[in-house]
Every structure is written in C-alpha cells, then in structure tokens.
Length: 474
Image (cartoon, rainbow, N blue to C red; front, side, top):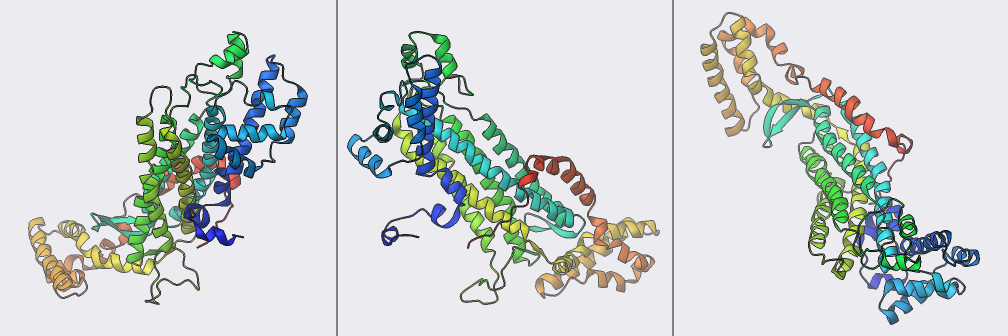
C-alpha cells in the first residue's frame, strides 16, 4: 500500500508500473546495503584467516546484524557526513560496538560500492536470461507450428516472393539467439573488483599485512580483476549495457515492429483479452498495445547506451566521481527496462494469433504476378516461344495492374490468362503452377534445421525454468 505522500512525488514507472518484483528488488536499497554488510563480513573473515587480530566474537556480532539495517539512522548519518558508505559504516558500527574498530578495515568505498554493483549486474543477468530463453522457446514453438504456411514476403515493404510464417519467425529468432549469447557472455565475463585500496595498488592491505605480498594476493584472489584503479573499468558497464541495448534493438525492429505491421494487415495479432478496449473512441479497434509498449521501452533501452559510453570515455586517471550519479540511474534502468520488455514479449509470443484465410487472400492478390515466370516456363515446355509468351504476359499483367491500381479491383491476371486462347495448352496446369507451396523454396526445411541445430541447444540450460507463464499487468 502507498501512503498519501507517495503520490506527491515522482515515482519511476519502471518500478511502479512495469518491472518485475524480482528485478526491482535486485536494485533496491535493501539488496544494496545488505550486500555491503555481507562484503564487510567476508573481508573481516579473510583478514582474520590471514592473521589480523580479529576475533570470532566480532564476526559473530557482524553476522547477527547483517540484515537489520536502520535506514533512518543511515539517512541521518549521510546528511551529516555527505558520504553514503561512511554513513552505513557508522550505522553498522552502532549495532556492532565490539566489531566497530574492524568494520571496513583497509578498504575504500569502492570495495563495497563497486563489488555490490558487479553482484547486482550478475544477478540482473541471471534474472533476464531465463526470461529471454522463454521468449525464444515460445517463438520457436510458433515457428515450428507454421513452418510450412505460405505467406507473402516483403522487401522494402513491397510484396515480394513468398516465404512462410514460420520462416519469418526464424528471422526474429536468429537475432534473439544472438542476444542470448551476448547476454550470457557479458554475464560470464564479469569479475569482482576485489580489494584494491584507494588507487588500486593495495597499499593499505600491504601495510596491514606488514609487507606480506602473498597474503595481499590471497585476499584479492577470488575471481577479481587483476588491475583496477579505485574503481573497476567502466568499460565493463559499457559491455553489459551494450548487450541489453542490442536486445532492445532486436525487440523493437525485428519482433514488435514486424508484429505491428502484420497486425495492420490483419494477418497476425498479439493476444487480446475478451474485455480489453482497443480505443476509447473506436470500439472496433484492436490496437497492438503490448507490441507498442515493447517498442516504446526498447527505444529507452537503446538510448541508455549513450550513458555508459560517455561515462567510460571521461574517467580521469585512477578515478573521478562524475560517474556515480549517472550509474545510479543508467545501470538499474537498463536492467529494469530489459526486464519488462522480455516479460511483455513472452506474453505476446505465448498468444500470437494467426489468420490463415487473410494470409491466403493476400497471396491470391499478388501471386499471379509472381507466377508469370512459371507460366512462361510451362508454355515453353508445351512448345511455345519464350519471347512471344513474355509479350503476352507483359500485356495482360499491365491490364491487370491497371484494374488493381486505377479501379481498385482485384487482381484478375489469372482470369485473363484463362480467357486467352494462346494459353490453352497449359490451362490444366494453372492450379499446380499457382500452388503457393511451390513458391516457398526450402523454407520449411530451413526452419526445422535452424530450430534443431541452433535454437533448441541454446535453451538446454534453462529447461527447468521453461514452464513459467507471464500474467501481464496492464
């Protein structure tokens, strides 16, 4: 429940309206600051194991207060100190008086700040990857179901040769599979910043351990970047957000924009609830609202790419603080936006509606023009002259095109061919010549091979999480 004062200030729609509870929690203050405390506990344990005078009682005291954060006290401390990390050091120390002298020992703010950010990035990817896998799975099922259903292909959004509904879906799947690999690689490339001190030299820890380089090496060993400044390289943020922005481009350009175009043609529609209203003024409308939401948010996700690029480009020497405010916004928003895009797209792909009769009608309007070469070949096989036949077809095609474009009528080229005595030798072959399935090439075979060799293996690690359905809150 919201208090009355909650409606007197701006709330990010990414959290209040769109993103999942899990992703919203991943970038929450509670997740952030409890992770800080975990990191302080890990540091104390490592320092104790390596010989510093830290007691079991101090560590137990820290562990017993890991989760009970006094956020009001921390806020008051930050108002006084103007330093978020020291505010939480003081707040933690207040409830851990015995451990207070060794909390944050030898560390700099980026020990908790950067390492926590890296944990959040990793956990964010771990939330997104199963969602993307489910989208790919649903779309793969769709592609398999309609692998051999002929449909009018388009180049330049002008009618072109036929493809199939399933083959077109595989074009979307191919880009989503690339995004899947990009997200997984970006996630797997993440390391910890480790414990490096104020400029990344570990000088403070070398002093704590009285010049023992081996102990300093050990305390920093766990999957961390070998060299950093005070912060980990902000190129890491570029790499993470780039994979998300690329996903946004895929969702916008390939999936949802195509679905909106096909909805206009009434060939394919996103799911539409029984009581859903498409327009307040036009009751008959069934607007592609989900796809439009994906496109709208995808533009924001793509635009966020500029933030980490610019931040990485302006870092000064060992560090500069002009990255902080930007990263507090751009990193969480990238993951929150990707999260709702994938949830919405899963909902769309679980309920895509295909109208084969509409698709068939569109094919009938265009196929006679596309079949002219086949008609010429059939006439040549029946003993006709290729050039004579070409001229006949050219004239009849122009006449049929005039009916379509100038009179608004249907394409009657086939009827004109059937009436012309010249084509009498092949009239019995016209149905076979105009069978749409003879115009789709190897599209069904391409779908089957692509799904079995590239798509299904990509989903194997996520099989246990495939059954989750999305109940989209609109």
